[in-house]
Image 1 (tube, rainbow, N blue to C red):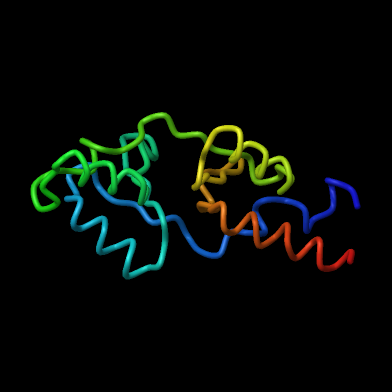
Image 2 (spheres, rainbow, N blue to C red):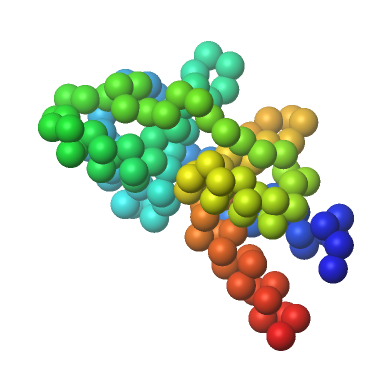
Amino acid sequence: MTATRQDERVDRLIARDPVQVWPDATLRDIAELLERDQIGAVLVRGGDGASGIVSERDLVRAVAEGADPDTERADDFMTYEIVSVDAATPVLQVARMMLEGEIRHLPVHDGEGLLGIVSIRDVLKALVERLERTA
């Protein structure tokens, strides 16, 4: 199996458009959005695309630090350094990146812009399916 096969690309794991919030969205708004849409992270809009990402982990950290979910905002707790990956990146390479960087949600882009976000669960599912096909 080669890394250039279409089914090996990370973009095949994208199930939906990326969910985005404004920097002034409250932590409660974000938590409700994550729950409603059954996702683990949202991108925070910036001037030229996403300026950050807020994940479940960021929300847990905020609450543990005593943040008021009704007044604290996305831009107070978002991760500013967004690691993203190109759509053609092989799934196995993405898995390695996520493990080494301790990343659970990874935005995927192509030459035109952001396509979506893949989670570590998406990557694990793809790898398990690959193993089952070859077993």
